[in-house]
Length: 256
Image 1 (tube, one colour):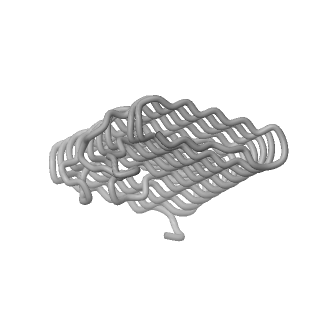
Image 2 (image 1 turned 60 degrees about the vertical axis):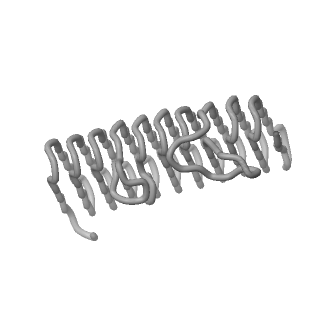
């Protein structure tokens, strides 16, 4: 077992690492003041890396994944059943990663103030990546299916007060190819995204730039593709997909 945690910086940082099982690794680096990190690893072959700078940031990583699955990283010559990384810079940011299932990977990067991100992974071979820059942004990425988001960005938000919620409960059949993927990019302020994705080998791509845009994609069935491109301000889109081999594309607004 390898353990590592550290508090480096000015004032009153707090770090807690709890580990059981074997071949787990946790590294916590904090600079600034009043930051808090909690890491819990209760299975084996799990890796957590937390880096926080600024003031009043809070991070929670819970890993209880079972060893094995479709794809693995190697930790000290052994199979890694889960990997989580959190990087936060600024003030009053919050992040939570909860992992169960097997072979799940989650990464959160937040720059700015008062951003919040939550990744929940209970499936197998899932990859979740969230990047937020600005202030007051919120992201929820809930993955309970299998083979999701390998090879795609996940959620990328820049600006202020953007909101993204993604739920993936379906199954992909191709590990590093099209297979229940979601790619969300929002820039500007007060944009809203909701994706509910089930079924098999579906893909959703949402790009919103501007302010006060709204996108809702409800996707099931097999081999369906949803594309949303919205620019300028106050655009709204709703896509409902079932069946198989359907493609829907919505393009609205300027500046695209």
